[in-house]
Amino acid sequence: MKKFANNALAGAIAFTLLGFMDSASAVVNVQCPGDTNGDAVIDTPDPAHPNAKCMHLIAGDSFTVMADSNPMYIFGYADRTGDLPDDVIGNGILDAEWPGTTVELDEGDEFFLSLTNVGTVIRPDLFDPHTVHFHGFPNAAAVFDGVPEVSISINMGSTLSYYYNIVEPGTYIYHCHVEATEHMEMGMLANLYVHPAQDKTGCLSGGCPISQRGGNTTGPGGYVYNDNDGTTAWDVEKALQVASFDSDFHDASLFVQPLPFALMEGDYPQVNGRGYPDTINPAALPAPADNSVPVAGHPAGKVTGTPGEVLNNGTPTQIMDSLIELTQGQRLLLRLSNVSLDRFWTLTAMGLKMKIVGTGARQMRGSDGKNLYRETASLNFGGGETTDVIIETADVAPGTYFLHATEVHQMSNATQLDGGMITEIVIN
Image (cartoon, rainbow, N blue to C red; front, side, top):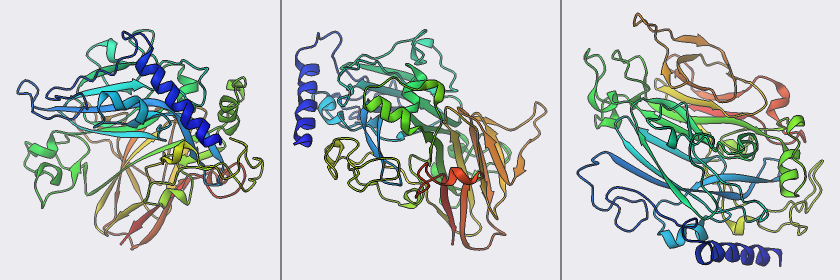
């Protein structure tokens, strides 16, 4: 019965957005060179934009499930590239993913990113606008920065297309900058990284060939930066976003209670939106269900009052795993980002040595051209920081290694059950 009610409410909101709101504030209007039908897919390449890339994201709400079976209400992004304009809002309701869709680009791209705000169907009393803030990226114009005070935010039912001239490689993140503490804590965060031109051109020194990403089947998988010496070459790449949810904060949002900003403390540490052992499941997690079995501290039926009811109309929202597999001798690139709002995290990989080659989307290199790479057994970094780490495996014994938080309580949930900031690196 509740599921039917959710479907009906979602349909009513979509109908309202599409049919009764003023057209100036309720238009799905995608900008993408060469796209002929508004689905953000290039049909006929535009000679004026030969390196154009397009994507259409929605911003909305949904539920995810923690590793101890506790469902969590979130705000988030999801990829609706390929949907026709008339279908985007209907398809985007209860579709928000955690983390949001990864954005992967190449230096030299022109990136046209359209964002549609589909509203929060679980909280129809909210009319929050949303933005995309490309964290750490040098925008040519402040209008695309996503900070509401100096740019544009997108109201419910509307679309804005952002334009980025991609000129600097590295590891970034993107997030909503409207009521940033609330929206980021609720899940409006995602991975974003840019591959360097050196992947396709090689380097002037001749010491680094074109990579496999550039079409050379015998070269490395790619490079982290335009290093001109091959020292940032990698064979296997993985983006890992570490974060934590404050369950009291998310529950307060779900039940329309005052949000406990001053008391915020993440009690669900995660990697790519999951706790262990869900982190190593390569498949998308099933759509969450209202917990029919009581979880310590979380009574059964806490969301809908109907234990076992499938949420999100059955749509999976946790797509990304964090299992890493490679062959002995390969070089592993970890694109690490910390999106926590309340703490630093310290990560370690017992038995493996990590070499930091970049931070904040900048290669670690001095003004004199000397590499300032640093080898470490653990990495400590704060919210909003990104770090590029390379792990050499030539002299490492095959086996399973654990990448995890160094503090014991961060390797479980608040309930002390399954979960926590742990994933596996498997070397074959």
